[in-house]
Length: 387
Image (cartoon, rainbow, N blue to C red; front, side, top):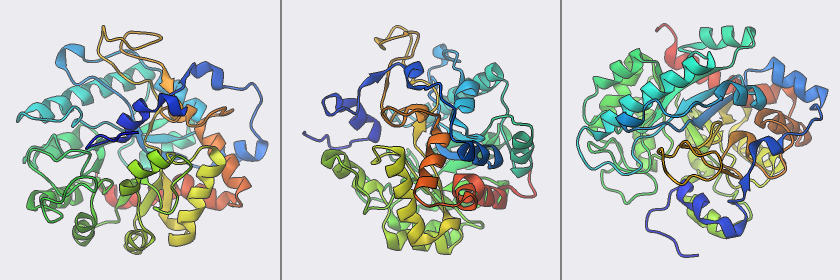
């Protein structure tokens, strides 16, 4: 397989139909009628399960807002998760004109507002909100944006975003912002790590109470950010660079996005948390083993779940050839959707993961920490004492 100069994970998944990763699925066919193991159901019910990086596709073009109806509440219920960090990124397609990133951000956030109203869901702004929602058995979301491209050199826009519910910011994504914040780990080094504007954004996040996510940041950017951050940070979606899965082409593309044992220890030593994604794992059991591998390196208090999948269908503009369903949506590929992360998956995502973690030797307490407790700790540290 020939590789493009700049592959994204989504580009790769869209290209490997012949390898089996792009088998189109009927979402309803993945659900078995059997109930999960009672031990699994007890842990799912008793823990705050959180996916620290979950994409919800939304339109960016004003004429397409708010986009199609999506059943986020039902997908959350199926998953067993208490909450997701509901994220979107605005740099694909690549931004070229000043103002475009900000416009996409406003349209994307308006679309997410509409999705939450449709589904009777609310954003959790702090740990009190998360605990209340869990106690009432109400799924909830934490608003996230992947990449500071919408800022365009205007750090004051963070306060606007905060007032709209943003509590989790990924500093970087695939493409450099018009006013860059730091070096992206899959791009040539251009800025020498964290830029002056990136440092300003981190300080403003500290002031407002926004959790800083250093996914996509290169080593120098991470090191500089850790020195500035007033609270522990998260790297929401990655995996150990020794866990490469069974597909050599996919492993080659994903390797730069993975973290070394040495770097993971540095993040953990500052109190940070690292999310393990579902990529490079062909089954829930393999995913649990990837979690175990990282836990063995940095300890059970510094690992979380960060799938980099989507609970809801992918969005395509009206009139596009999208496959079954139309209306801006299309068929799904194995690994793209959270509740269809693996072939022949019988239960929702968190049920499947808890079951696999039990089989891998994790205790209920350890699952509670990795499943959401560790994320909650850094989220509370970042947002405590604020709105």
